Length: 351
Ligand SMILES: *Cc1c(COP(=O)(O)O)cnc(C)c1O
Image 1 (cartoon, rainbow, N blue to C red):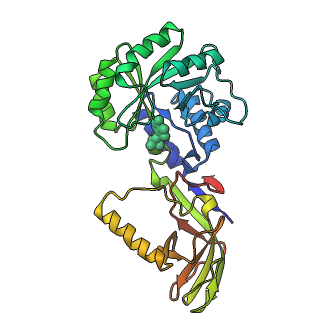
Image 2 (image 1 turned 30 degrees about the vertical axis):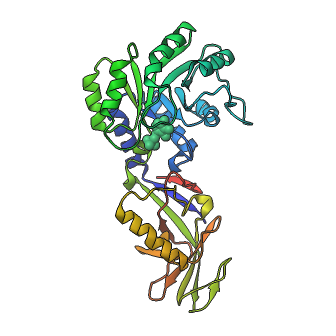
Image 3 (image 1 turned 120 degrees about the vertical axis):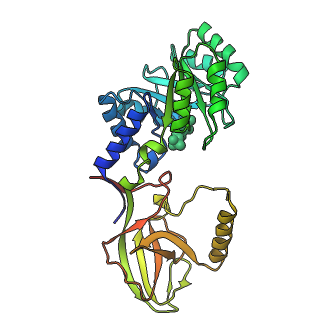
């Protein structure tokens, strides 16, 4: 009775190996819900790739994730969120040795870096540059001075990191940084395309360019992955029958109770701005259906999309299957479309 992420292990691991081999110095990003696999699975894969000398360093999103990563990964662990003097690294969590020799911190300014050095002794750091992403970082004009100040104070600066928006077209922005900031050999780069990276490697042959990759690595071969949900109950219903917390009326057909609800990340979409007219039209159309209590569910039965009886519950969903559609049996698995970055599967089955 569960939501299961089924992984074709041989195919998935082949994709991981190819991704890393195509990008020397690649830093796998292991964060959040572990891209649907959970952190332990990804940390085990990173450790395996480290054993094969394909991966040295991994990146985690937060300080809260760092202790688990340090315990599981034999190589270095970079923390993507910047160190802040004003923010306890692990609020209320287990202790983290900020001076751990395998830990690399992101810093964006001198005061934070000095606070870190005061706590950690000799801390390893990377300096984050503020890009068009406009999230965090030291502005372009400030970075050379910051690097000099950090070196003066004895901090081991291991490179500069740039986090770019999604999409292509970052070549000139990155080139300006790499060409304009002297004396930095290692550049960590997020969200560059393979061809952008290739061009940059040609332009800057004496620099080490290290892409940080999550989605394209762990989720880059969707054919190796399937999310399946067990059918827990099937009941024939007549027109006018009611079901659910909200007692909505049903049409004739079958009521399906399937595993998978908000606790699994099912039917949770990250807010997205409708970029195209077509997307906006779909949003409007779905809003109209929603107002009429007709909400398409992400579960598919025999290749057909299905409708929610009501919003998904914590661990299960109620689906309405119209008359004429052959219902699945209890224990069958149905496909469920879920964003891997919100998925919390009950089990990850790697075969
Ligand atoms: C999450 C993150 C990444 C990885 O992003 P993907 O889109 O999953 O590859 C890289 N760099 C930074 C700074 C991030 O926060």
